[in-house]
Structures are given as structure tokens and as C-alpha cells.
Image 1 (cartoon, helix red, strand yellow):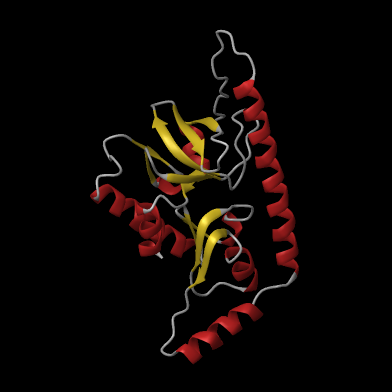
Image 2 (cartoon, rainbow, N blue to C red):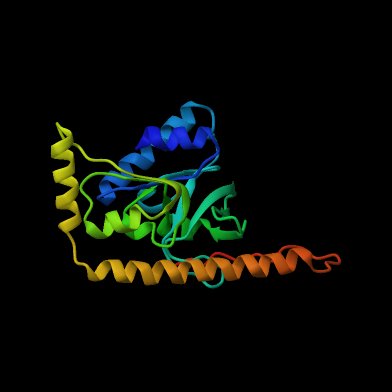
Length: 223
């Protein structure tokens, strides 16, 4: 899964990684961040702290985990860290809208985490160039994960033979409650509608007359 991320990253493609557990997602996130540091893509000299004292660097892919109307961020939305200051972080949406938000350092410590890889709940409504679903996910995970990629969707299965791999995949499709897939679809549709609305508003702003205006950015809210 890590290699798939870097293969897509090298070609300018965005890859969604769907893991079976939060622990697995954390391990993948840490490994990708560390490799990016080693390759000189990320600079550790300027850092912020996320949930659980997770290190956040400029250029990292992150996810906000709490709705905040003042800052304009939503739970499970994904961003790229554009800048880090003592008091706040500047984030830009991973979507084509280019939406920019600012969250406080305190918000980051309590509600921001790395998001190169996520569980199925973290990718609802997300669309990328490619999606890779890891082992040990349930039926809902396969359904959501394998519909995130525009160009490619792959499921990884750990098995000794092709026949065993097919059997493992079949068993995964039987796990989980079918009702979750309906909820996933509804949430995904709602998320897509919100993103489309924001993109439309940004397009109107970009094409309208602007005289001496500056971007309006919300303030982060501390808990």
C-alpha cells in the first residue's frame, strides 16, 4: 500500500489508501511521512502537533476530525498543510476546489491527523485517481474503498494461492452489515454536494470584480 502511494505520487496522481483498522492506518501514515522526509519532500524543522502528539509537517496530507463553522472545516475532510505558524496552520483542500482554511494550533492538537491512509469511515465521499484497499476490511469497506478511484481500484489480499485469495475476498464481502453501505452512499452523496457547492461559490468569487479585497479566513476555535 505504501509503494502504491509513492508510485501514484511520483506520477502526480492522488491515491486513497483504505485500511482495516485505525492502528494499521497510523502505521501506514507514519511510514509514508518518514519516507517523504528521507526523500527531502518534507522538512521536520517546522512542525505542528496533531491528535496523540502526531507530528504534522508542511506538505502532509491530513484530515480534520471535527466540524467547525468558524474555520470552515468539516469532520473527515482532507487537506494538504500549506503553512505552519505558532498560532495556526493553513490548509488547502485536496479536491479541485482549492478551498483554503485556517485552524488554530489547539484545534490541530485535538482534531487533526495524518490521512495518507484512513479506515473506510475516513474516505466516505472522497474521490481520488486510484484507490487501494488493504486486507481485513468488511463488506462496507470493500464497497466504499473500491469505488473511490477514478482510474483504478485495487483490493489487497494476503494469501498463499490465487484460490485462497479469492476465498478471502469472498469472506470479506460477507462481513459487516449491509445497511452500512446505504449510509455510506448517502454520506458520500452529501459530501459531494457540499464540495460542488463550495467549488461553485469559489468560481463565482474568482470571476467577479474584486477591488482591494483580501481573502477572508476564519479563526481556529480552541477547546
